[in-house]
Image (cartoon, rainbow, N blue to C red):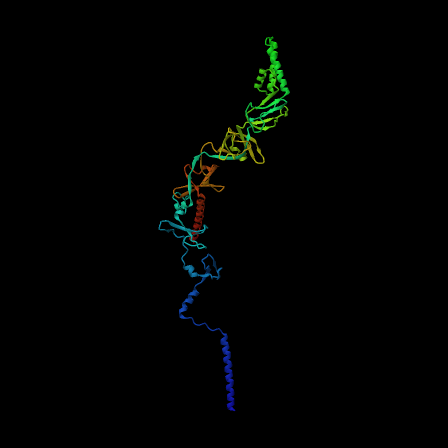
Length: 492
């Protein structure tokens, strides 16, 4: 019995011990294991990490972008922490460094953006595309002995820009006014053949339009009963006058008056003196009489036809003397003040390329065309060779003096005009250019009248001035930007 009891007690104790061990093991497994003691070599480093404080996080590519918390950039790279001891221990940002000296003696003031953007740097750097910033030297930064307003450019830069200068000089300034017109007949040289009697055309001597005729040249032979009767009356009175030579003075005077009256009637019919002399010489009335040309010229119109009957006043011929012609030009109203009677004019026509015809302004018509806003100007041109034909299209050039005497001028290309302000670049020694405001007057023939701002003989830039002006403006902007950065650096 005793032995069995002992065995039972031992079994209970063993089960209890095993259960306690299982619960103890489970408890130990659920509890976190204690951290292992750090090695002696890493003890100091952990203290240092604990002492350093992160101020902010900066962009891993060096871009001007920071963050107060950890983050990643667009490429997934972690921002780099910046510690307080790095900020405190780093020296304060210095002012822009003193210009660096080069072996050739030129001093670099700063570096500018290679793409012309308003960005400068006191030290060499690259832009976002990897291009090096361009150094700006002291002799290129607008510092010149001629004055602070003078832009200084290196000689090689001047040659590269293609700078060209020209001296301001006195010259006669003339403006050329151009207009268009057409050749017309001189109205004072027109003539018509319009007989004062009724008749029939028996013979036509000039039977084509455009024929050239001379004064007194026969045009036609006409039969008129009225002319035949007038001739007979004259012959009767003339014969009576001759028979009364021995009569008393009163009878002779009456006979002479009748003869003169009959002769004057023939003259009033435009019968020329040669036919009247033939009538007195032959003493017989002619059946037909000859009508002659009243002037030299060209037949512009002809209505006469052989055998036709015409009435008194009917126009049979229209003749124009083209030894002198008119050109009627249309001049715009804004140019009328430059046109004066007697002014010399040069006329060109398409029919004769390269040839110019000289003339003078004869008259300026008083009315304007309301639709085209032009006024007609009459130009008189000699035409001895007859080259200028009626209705030819003509290009007219009026040379109008802008001033009575010579004025100071510069080439128009030298003027940089912003609309409100005009500036020229005056050469001030080798590589030096002074932007100088000027007052500009009239412009003509590629030159501008300088009212004030430039003296006679001063040389101004006429080519590449816009490039110099743009570079000057860029340097001024970069200079102001650099000074602003320097002020911010020196600010406590």
